[in-house]
Amino acid sequence: MELKQLKYFITIVESGSFGKAAQKLEVGTSALSQQITKLEDELCTRLLQRSTTGVTPTPAGLAFFKQAQLSLRHVKYAIEAAHSSRLTGHVSVGFSPSIASVLGIPFMQLMSERYPDIKIHLVESLSGNLTHLVNSRQIDIAIIFTQDVDVNWTLQPLLKESMFVMANRSLLHEHGLEHCIQNGKIDLNQANRLPLVLPSQRHGLRKFLDQKVELLDVNYEVDGLHLLMNCVSHLNMATIQPVSAHFDYLKSDICLLKVVEPELARINYLISHSEEELSPASLATKVAIRSTVKHLIYNGLWPSAELLDF
Image (tube, rainbow, N blue to C red; front, side, top):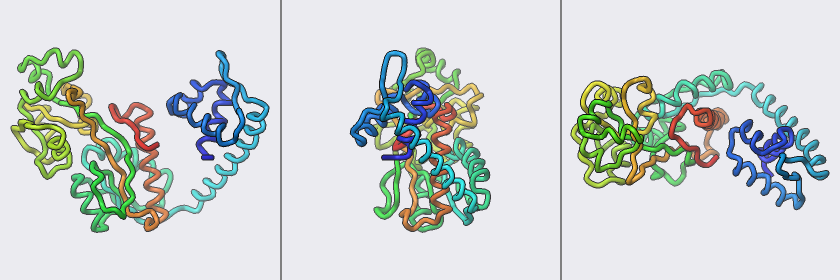
């Protein structure tokens, strides 16, 4: 039995329906139903009576509801006691430029509110560099784009990002791709007709694309995300990136066209040294990263990103 199952059950009873509870909890209705079924199977008893008008607790469910409320109240007290102990320490965290553009400020804000006595050193660097920094113990935690890491590390799939071709409207019109603007999609044969600017092959994104796509015709190579996106914004160039790379340019005239045939998606992994080695401050920081990611995606602030392993 998991604490989230207690929380889910209480919210369903209080809401009177799975749909309303799912909205409050910011989870899918099917995932909510699966957790309740799992809970009922574990207890070997029916907790909820489902009908066309909603759900009500069975006699067993009502008895369980009262005790579950009490249990969660004690958990809340335990959490408050832990927070009141004022975690301290130094934690170094690594984000790629695209991840930092979306996650950096909300993560730092959450850390300052939740753990004001933890000192954070945030490093912005390429995914490959972050892997090296964790391996050499220069940083504690990072988000990278490969699972090819040391076997002793803790690795968690965090989220999946779809890939998009990004280009000015005028460039797409020039190459006869008006229909792509209308349906918001583009295939790689069409993308290859555009003058592409991408990071060099030492960059994690480029390695990912080279593994997925044969004969990608790259005209320009720029390793700095800010300069690369400025090239797309001000010059006749296109790029292939996740939405997070476009985050600072959402109000610009750059079009985002989802790549199809093949559809491309990049997985972001949260890595650290073995959790047995991490300090309480580092463990709390990992929780804060996951919480921030979940909040951004559920509130539509990280378009096209999909949570994994939550």
